[in-house]
Image (cartoon, rainbow, N blue to C red):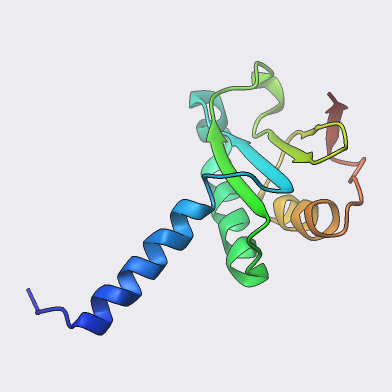
Length: 122
């Protein structure tokens, strides 16, 4: 194994701190990808990967990402819930990577609910 320099360790520390900040703390927006067994079997991992790519590109610190268990609507998996401060949460159904990118850009960033994918406003 190659030795790490001090600069390598600092870069690694910054990356880990950024990754942790995506999951912890208070934020204006919380995006939950429901990754129970049924969600994973239906493609929730690809949805989470697309979300993380969008998060990386957006470089926003006011958005948190969380993985959670089944929403209880297994027949509509993969499900994603978007919660924006001061607004009712919106559950999206039958998500895939492309739909997740659209929901992120339109709902999470611009505040425009995407009714074509929405299951319910909670």
